[in-house]
Length: 249
Ligand SMILES: Nc1ncnc2c1ncn2[C@@H]1O[C@H](COP(=O)(O)OP(=O)(O)O)[C@@H](O)[C@H]1O
Ligand SMILES: [Mg+2]
Figure: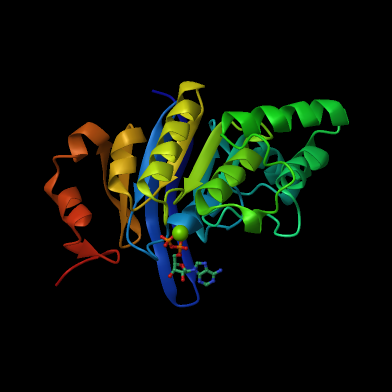
């Protein structure tokens, strides 16, 4: 199977704290891969590195076979049109309406589209994500589930090939969690590969083809979801016997 993203021997420290050491990771064409690990184990930093927002101390990152590690900011801007990062918080601009939030990436990157075409795109994606009519609402007036969907809507404005979902179900009730799971599966059905950063194992099992468990700076275990479901190490993580990125002593 072809890999769309390959990370080789990725190391990253902040001050004296080493977060990743020689980490290898890959994402195959068309799949959704879960990236699971304790809080602070480095999941978000790895995602940020995949779109050039963090520079590795050492190691390489490949996107469709192309070594992008040393890309300059302008080159990364092109990669970011293809890889969308749905931030943990939703990261909408608080002072802009939902529609203005969605218009923002289109104004920045799609000068080829008329205002009318942009509007049609915004309305289409809002409808797809169950946010029809929310155009003029401010993010603060949306529920947590709606904010996450609006964040995803904004990420979809540029028709990304890959979506990095950073804890999209954190803090959501079962109904909204199911909603997000369905959306991830819908995105996969359109051929978009994804990385799902999560602690929410039911969502990982419901959407992911493969799983990678990040622990002590490396992918400690990875494989097809169906196989790892039975894995005792993954089970210990799920039940909380292994926590905070470290095995209990
Ligand atoms: N910009 C930064 N400066 C210093 N430390 C950081 C920075 N970004 C992340 N870290 C640290 O790196 C570790 C991994 O962070 P993160 O990837 O956000 O973890 P998580 O797995 O919870 O997403 C944490 O200990 C965090 O405090
Ligand atoms: Mg995180």
